[in-house]
Image 1 (tube, rainbow, N blue to C red):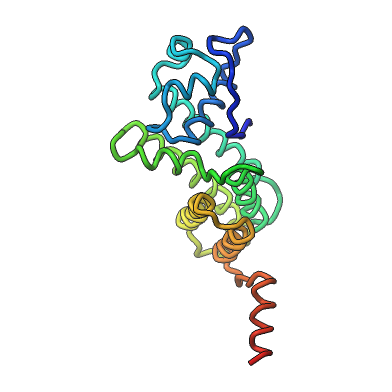
Image 2: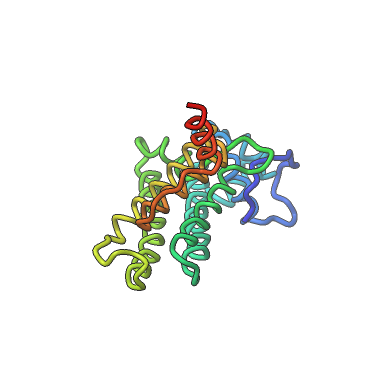
Length: 226
């Protein structure tokens, strides 16, 4: 799936080889960059290379277009999570694969950190827009469900304590994902975010969280000096 937020100017109008999926990706990137309220129709026209009548004809108004981009992002997130979670790898590796994939999306190379499209844009609009609030709830529930399915399997296979609650742990796993999204936008380093994800996975799996190597070395040096 196209994930770049870099937007190039395109001739407006409906391109001869019109690609609705690419246009939706480009519109999503525009919303991701400026937020729903901060993204004008002119910005959407520039991003997609389509003039206003073409945009309206293909997708309806700006609101309908935004809802479409949310649907696509939720579906993309669900599919990538399934790929990471539903293989034969151990639970800890599967969870870390989800978080590594998220960090690759949240921290594109040579670009400003962008975080999660759903959290970063829909959370702002949800208070005053019931439809966006519904999409936000749908997305969170979808991601919870993918985590829960893998955690249920882990419990059945003995990777988790028999008394563990997959439903509650799934919300913890999602909360880690949301934290990575917000902290990536706030400027946390990839190394710090990865350490946060590893600590969260250790908590979920019931294993001791390890201090990153650099921190351990600094602590050791300090104690030696004392």
